[in-house]
Image (cartoon, rainbow over all chains, first blue to last red):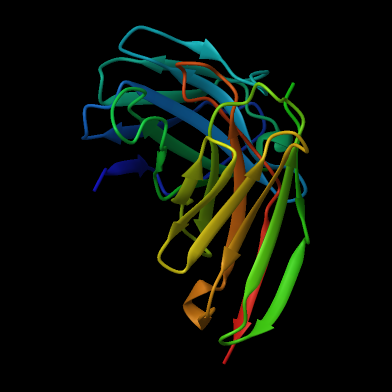
Length: 115
Length: 112
């Protein structure tokens, strides 16, 4: 089964702080995604990538940067964190080709609190 | 932008009941529709997907898709307490990107 890991699992920072969330997948998937999950809004796509060095804008990108350094690693950067970015963040990966095309495999999540 | 609406918001059923969850979407050109299950403190996990009009059965799960009415439903037969979770409907909107738009979810509780 596809494996996606995230670190840290919990993070507390202050307004204006810098935060980097990390995600690694070990299944050679082409696509990786960053979501945030909030009560009343569900899961919303922040950024995604289809390979090392590639970045695509999602539906709620404001205040976030992302970087895909290798096929396995995808990072989400909050350079000036704000309380509105307090949320549960999920990373996911998928292989857009093949028998199970587009099934996304999710990591366990990172809970971020911005004070 | 694709809109995905789910109903009901929450549902409580006794063990062994048939569960029916609904999802409507806005874009008739949508690709696959997925159902995900999310237990507390965990990431979502894919359950079943459908692309063509009609139904698809996998174990206790059956999904029905009607593209004309932009509606998909998930039915869980013989529900178990372990089925208690949030169920998310997701629509694949980006050709060759795997991009998904999610609904807000239905909270299901199956009591023994």
